[in-house]
Length: 444
Ligand code: AMP
Image (cartoon, rainbow, N blue to C red; front, top):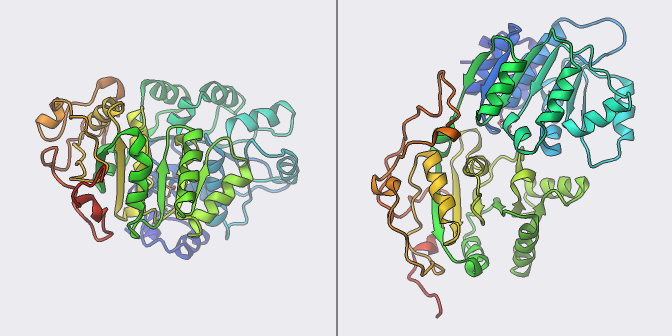
C-alpha cells in the first residue's frame, strides 16, 4: 500500500518521500487511519517498527488541517521515558513536519532548563517531554497544558519500569478531559492495561511484531562462558570484521565502563552510553556510533531505550538481562526496518536461570554456539521442558500481557522450528563468528 492511500496531505507525503520510505510499515498502515479519524488508540509495538511516524504523521495532519489564528499554543504532547527517546521523537516531528510550518519543542532533564524555557516562551504546537522535567517546568509555571488536544504516551511499559507512572498520572490530571489519547507499549502488563483503561476512551487496539515474531527474524545464539572469560570472548568475536556496528549490553554502568576500557586496550573503538554520562557525552557517543567513528557502543538497558541507529550489525548481550522482556528490547536494536540482524548472548552458569526465562518468554529455543575457545566447562543442567520439546513452552501468564485482540502475543505460536540444544547457529550473509567453530584452545 502506498503512503498516498492513507489520505495524508501533500506536505507530509513530501517529507516521507524525502526520507526514502517506500510504503507504510504495518503499524503505520494500521494506526494512521484511526488517528486521523480522531480515535483513541492503544498500540502494542516496539521501537523499530516505525511507530513514531504512526503517531507523528496523523497528529501533524490534524494540527495542520485545523490551524489556529493568533499565537501558537501547545496542541499535542508526547511523553517519553528517556531523554534519548524524547529527542528522537522530537527529531522525527521536525523531519515529518518540515513542510507543514508546525513547530515542536523537546524538553528533558539533565541539561540546563533555560534554553527550553525560552523556546517554550516563543511558542510551539507540539511538545515532546520526559515526565520529570515537564513536572519541574509545570511547577514553575513555564508550561500550560490546558490547550492540549492530543496526548501520546510512548513506551508506557518503560515509564512503569522507571517509576514514572505516578508522574504521568499527575500530568494527565492537568490535561483537558476532552482530548485524543494514544498509548504505545512494547509489552502489556496488567498495570499498563489498567492505565490504558483509565486514560483511553473506547480505543482501537493495534498490535504489530509481537515479541515472538520480532525476535524470530534475528539470528540468535548463546555462548556459554564463565565470567572471567567474557572479556576474551568479546575480543575474540570482534576479530570478525563483519561485526561492524555493534551494540553491547551490560547490566550495570560500571560494567559498561569496564568493557569500554578493555576494548580500548584491545584497540577496538568503543564508547559507553549510560545514565552517569552527561547528556552531551551521550549524544556525542551516539553520533560517533551512528557515523561509524565508534565501532562498539556499550550500553545499559535504560540508556539504550530509544536508540535509533539503523544498520546495527550485531547486538551482544555481554550480560544476560534478568528481565526477559529486556532481551526482546535489546535484540530489537538490530534487524531494524526489516534488515537482518544478529544477536549473540553470553551466558554464565549464574545466568542460566535468566536464559530459561527468556526462552519461555520468546517461545523459542535459542541455538547454542557450536564451539568456541572460551566455552564454559561447567556441565549444562538437564534440559528444561522447553529444550526437551525442541521449541516452545507456554508463556507464564503474568508476563504474557495478553492483548485479547488481534496480534495477541500470548496466543502467538512459536514461529521457527528449532533444532536440538547443540545445533550450530545458521550463518547469514553478514557472516558470523567463523572462529566459533574452531577447535577449542582454552588453556593452550
Ligand atoms: P521507530 O520505530 O519509529 O523508532 O522507527 C524505526 C526506524 O524506521 C526509523 O529509523 C525510521 O526512520 C524508520 N522508518 C519509519 N517508517 C518507515 C517506513 N515507512 N519505511 C522505512 N523506514 C521507516
